Image (cartoon, rainbow, N blue to C red; front, side, top):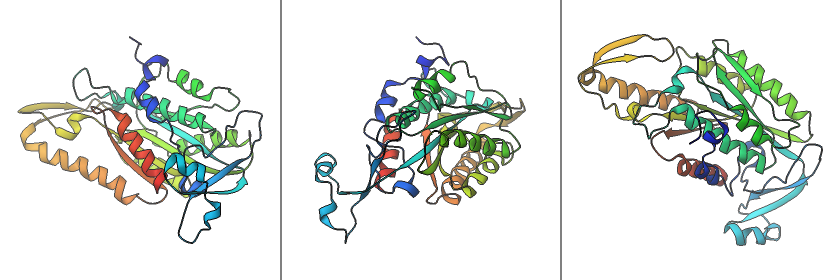
Amino acid sequence: MAAPGSPDAVLNPRLLGATAGLALTARRLVAGAIAGLHASRRPGLAREFSQYRAYQPGDETRHIDWKLFARSDRYYLRESEIDTRVVISLVLDATESMQHRGGGAEVPRKFELASSLVAALALLAENQGDPATLQIVANGDVATVLTAGHRQPFRRIVQALDGVAPAGRWPTDPRRLTDALRRAENTANSSGAGTTARLTVILTDGHQHGEEIRAALAPLRALQHELLFLHLVAPDEREFPYRGPVQFEEWETGRTLEADAGAVRSAFLEAGQRESDAWSQTWGDDRFDYLTLLTNEPPERALRIFLRRRLQR
């Protein structure tokens, strides 16, 4: 069995396989995109590729790609050859609260699941030829893993996860994440030209002491990043199975609270629902997408449905 945090431990074959035939795209740049949108792009090569978009009433049928229709059973039009790409930034929450399991030994810790999701999305980015970077949030700071110039960016990201252990909390200065992403984007853009969209994927449990996560993400919206928020929720956070007197301890501060589980259950569950609604409703627009992932359920199905839904919009 692979040791926790090792490269083999984050490689979930079913999760990696769930990305097959799909694409991680930015709606602003490639609305109606499909798998195979981007031709292979490798360091040192400047290769153009075709863009597809979904057929709309009024489009000339002579532009329909019938071979693609035979494979996908959907109508797509091949547009003129242009040089476009998506810079994908994977933001991994590695703060203390991500150690939470909230279930039996068969339930992965939030960080274990998040790391496997990072690996799957990094593989997806590599397969579609788009640059990807990893930002690791821990101990009040942001560490950047760059892949520009590496022949196998997926392997680079997986190896970087080796030895990472959740610690500390989110930075209180929101510029930490913004500055890290800007530096990473500049490095990615230096290796190629063309129209670029910014797609930032945040993998987190959403635990914050104030509003530090929202404060960190708000500037990215102003900078025209499209944000995908993957919210990891443990089974005890969804079900609150406790009974009688319970002592709760906060991961990142060690603060404790004693309460009768029955008396606080409704308030706890309602607070969790309000937090989820605040992300999905208040921030929901064309540049923000939200997905809840329950750590006690296989993530591959939810991820595949999520990616398919994005492609069909």
